[in-house]
Image 1 (cartoon, rainbow, N blue to C red):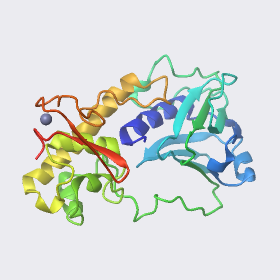
Image 2: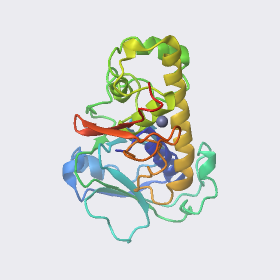
Image 3: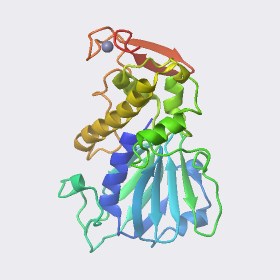
Image 4: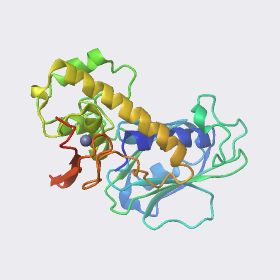
Length: 292
Ligand SMILES: [Zn+2]
């Protein structure tokens, strides 16, 4: 499942590649993934991209009038491609973009500058959204239509896990409302947004805390350590993904993770064999040697 680090890199790259370009064509080979009418889809044509960004586990395309929000859920992936190249199977939506004359936007992430994968201004790149399980959704949000995006409501989504406004003081305050198990806490989008199954395991390993421990059992220093591990785990992952993901934005790079899905391997910190348990339909990986 794409999480905050994965989607941050996609959003930064797509913003650099596509902001300032008008949409040339919008088609839905897999219309079941689309929340919106054929008219909503057609109306995207000609609208210029203002920005592409991430919020929680959603990708947001702000156009000059309308918006598109994608929730890729488990298996949704984004490809940046040239038109005419082979369309991947299970492609749900294709957005084609026109030339731009202005170059990449001024607020493009510095790492995207002068990269080989960045389409030339006179190119006409495409975004393809594909989803083998068809669980993800593409919400078309015309300016004059009120359409709910489940999971994006005010009460459903806390601050992004990397939000600069989420200070350690704000973290201490927010975490009080959540007494339960730490893994569930980190994955709870209403607490902090953007973390899922993989990065919750990584953060807990970073904090040396067991996934099934209750937040109510944490000492004050452990609450702060969880905050520091959240920030540093995310920052390190984004740094690695910026180097390793482009140009194949549709691939999920996870091989550098310390514990998640590494059951049976040696813990990189203490050498103990990593434990892996399946509970609630998903895998939790952790180290009994160095997590308490
Ligand atoms: Zn260990």
